[in-house]
Length: 629
Image (tube, rainbow, N blue to C red; front, side, top):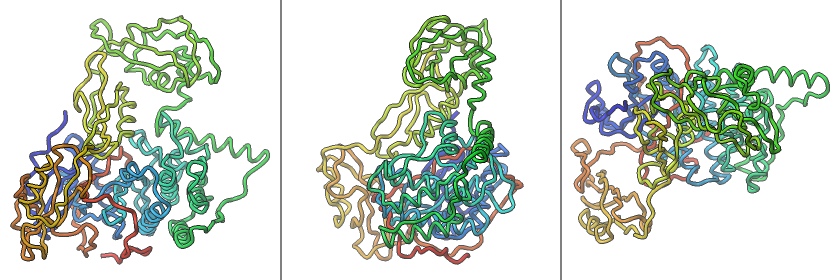
């Protein structure tokens, strides 16, 4: 059942961190905005979810993240200030980042400019160079794990599955299934990984930034994993002709299948990125690429390479090999017979099989190029849960299909029971990650897009039924996904320079309202609006709430501020996000021994930003990492 975390709001953890509100929720943790009573600054407190807080693997990943980041000190890597792992409560105190994920920014912009792509890449490479120098491989570089502040500064986050120095390599598992769009071929194959694996993932990310599309995409994760290992991406310039040749070469060099053919270090890749920023017409030859294997030895090498696919199939999702085995066991021989032309098939007999307990059957049907399956539970006390009672069309029927194009719509009536999957918590997930999760649980669903001023476009707002519940017989889950903020015909007036009451009046005259009011220390007269979240002239719907920042005067004391949700709201803001302050060694309280593990990555927290960021590398951020604390 979905857990309420309201009880933490207002609480003070370990006599120091006062929780203000929830700012995000993911598969593993709930993140709160809090005030550090000792320093007076805002921090993000990442609390391990109560429903998994006793799971050994979840705790190990939680500790793994804290240990990885505690070893690092770089302006492009999120900071950790403290970690507490106790029996009743486990949390990490992190740098509070005001901005959005790179993924959200990309969804808004569709295609990023060459300068934005190179600027973000240079900052990520600077962060990776620092991490790699410490022996840490991130292993999950993707836009969802990269934050972008309002000033354009990049922050690499989520080191939960990072490989620490001298740690044993762990292959990807089905719990990391959402990352298959960005993982390197060696990760997918279960081979040894190193820093070059992060460079491949960055190459995929750059491809998506420059073209607006992923290099490899398919309906099933296993298909994507297979493509990562065996297929060559379409050249970026063929997708977006505006991509400079030099940028295409950098992306292709980073995405070489063989790690030995790629950039050999973040520093080497950063040199090319920097050169292209200086000279947009620069081109690059891949000095690392070995000559192509040809002839008989080349064929043998290809066969040997293909044999490494077994770990993908076992580690990422269900293999095509299993489909062949299932075909022999239950007679679904037509499922794996690949043809492209129209044909007439004889519908197989599924009645009597157990859909819920027979994983091979479910996998075969999910990956079938013949059947498109709908499961309808039916209350039945005579058979075990999942028993297939009826099917439509009936076995032996003749149907015309075109494999992978035109399907036989197959409905299976199964015995209903408590074994029907429980709806997972998907709020704040990216749409694609949520869909992958539902498909892995065999939960039928439909998508409804709704306007939202709270959730970024593409984020899940809620599900019906809610998390923790089960579907009724024949019911489909509804996944409500944000399509962005509500649009309207009302122009937001200029509020900056007005007194608070004048701003309220100006908004009311337009049919709008003041949202959250935040006080800041300022030379402006007390009570004067100094910032507004929605810019003047922005068109919005009636009753939209506009957040504002108000001057508390030059002597304003943030410690006496009071946070409410009205015109008189005062919310302390004691430090700017992009500020780099020297910190003491993080206090690490660890009660579990370190062991690497792979678990499902959660969506990165997105906090409010007053203006949409533009990726332009801040002047104070250079290629060299800052000195360690």
